[in-house]
Length: 338
Image (cartoon, rainbow, N blue to C red; front, side):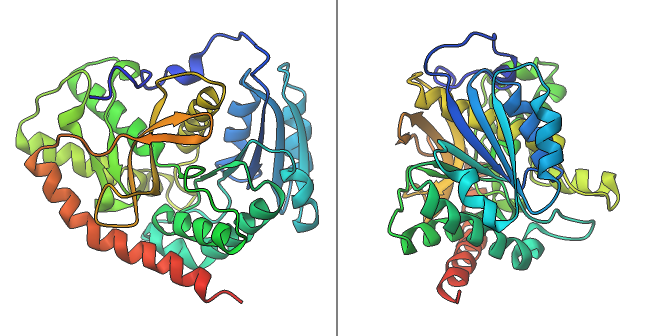
């Protein structure tokens, strides 16, 4: 049901280099020196949609910014270092992307990152609420199932909360689903679109293969296997990197895809659809990822779950308790902050 609306996956990074008066997005990357931040900043610098790129981190940003600033595209690039420079990084931003935090090591779950990343996301969200309260906030930092409730509660505390502007970036789940299904069926991955709903960890990642375009038929054993692979794909990369980090390059690609979709929609492009983990009434928990129609002011319309198979229904039922617990954990964290 989303095929007519969704741009073919992958097409976003291969756009033609035209510019118009609207292609003036001011984008900040918070955590710009890290494993995701650097390649993400490179992809953003490469885009004609971006006119200003501001990069923040607690180390190395002047060097990263100097390096990127030599690239022959029009986005201006400036690096900001340390908390005292964060306000200047954020002022006037249209979109803020937050990949800051620590990555997973082998044997860790995304939830194991909570103690470190929760306070990082809370601090950065507070700065956004103060210095660019109108901006679109795109959180990549894991565990997304908890960091989005954290960002939301922080924005509420500052009295500037808008549920249509805070996004948990789950796009990598969609990118992986598209890739794995395409490999399995011998299709062009740029033409495959699999909505992935729920959350962004393990069994909360629910690929709706029944809604895949083009339509694919898989026997149950293949369906179970590929669903499991999509759910555990992050762990696949963590293991392969053997202690040297988690998915950074594919995550940067997915983050850029989401930002470009958002900016396209903010520029007035119609029919832009992406899945994202947001405040929601589509399931039995307060936040849930579903396909969203994006518009000038963020979420224009939540397209909901749609028609699903009994296998997918069962996955949703099994994911809800874990989602509720992760959401509560994030909310409680902000409640108990000094």
